[in-house]
Length: 159
Length: 438
Image (cartoon, rainbow over all chains, first blue to last red; front, top):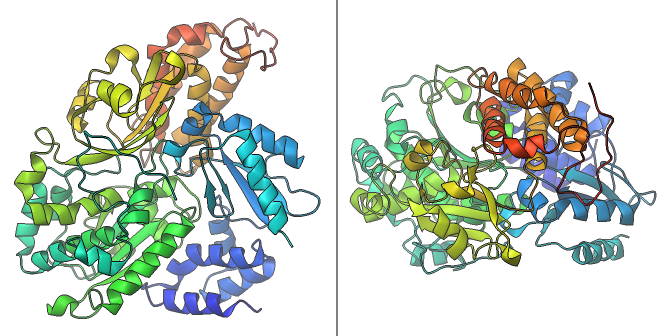
């Protein structure tokens, strides 16, 4: 299967960093997922073969890490933190607002495939709570109005 | 990205280059960068270790173990390669300090890893950054490439004849991986399941080689100690608690933020002066002083010095420096439930007391908060938690149990207020009332 040149270059370099090929697995899975949207059967088979692992071993690792997924999701994954520091400053309200706006619940994807929603654990933005990540971008000191603007901006960016 | 704050009581050591463009290697060099490692290269390895030991620097990840002591456990001779592993998996709820270090001063972490490597005669280091911090991984990869380009890393660093490689590594979402043995499993490309100890990582670590594992803030402190001296650093804090700490103030505060304060700073002052007190003139109910796993302190217990030993004496822990403030309108049962929901989600399932304990506690607290609790549940919550303590491979079980025990002990009345089908007294009628169990 074809992955980007950047992916190939990165993997080739990473493999020189460790005494075992397997060590490159976790960051490589995340980079592959960034390109494909989710970890397909094909990419799992490909990476297993390249890292001298069985598919089962790769799937065993995937199921452990919360950011890795074998199911398709929206172009923009809206991750709302509701952990303690965010909870104290209205994280739950932000999540509920997103549920209403997007019409989906936890791990749901909108019909147009633009957004998926996820309630996540602490993302390390406690002093700037409530906070969310859309894919890898942080959005902090949120209010319901602010998250609405954030969602609108992503919607405009979607092709 | 994250907003910086300041306060006159701050003593800036680890944060002294924040906001000064030090991600740029030339700027970092102007700001005394890479001087400490050059000094260390001219020092005897034992002298580096004793300098760090005498500085009183203790693990900033939460356990608070003396860093120099940890380094001294690494055997001098080893058939297998030795490694240094920087723990940047920061995931403890309430903690957001390593993020700022990586964002503003990535080279200080690299320099800390270099000095640790020189001290234990290791030639390979890894900087592990959690998967969610993608932008920081990019900053770090860039910083490492710049350091290689200048000849600070690789073969013959600074012309010393010493070879040293440092690599970046990334996670993909797992709190458990912040625990040292699970961190090594993750770096080896496996599920982050803890290893039994002994043997400790200093003897048998990554790929079986002796490994030093330190938190990012700990390692970022090391260059300052080498340049400023152990005595200067130790004197910044109370005895045996050297230096400063990045305290992450969050929750119901006027001015939340990450502030670098001397070890031993008074908690009351931290809340009411540094953090600006509680908004809306509300009263303080409780403080979680060092990240979600540390037992809470009540409003009557905040005249305490924020250092490892004083907080241990007060029945809590300094932990990871995450100070979470709860005002009087917070429901402690709900807070305990949210804390447990986190640990239940993050338990790797390897040890039964943690896997089952967190699950049952989450179920019980959910029912309890919704008004379906029984009086005997209150003692059961405490009993279940106490039975998790010390019965797991890693401290995640303890981390879930310790705060829960404190919530029940210190706020028993609030648990009683949820009994007999009464919905949460703090919610505005949002909770559905459950049928009363008998």
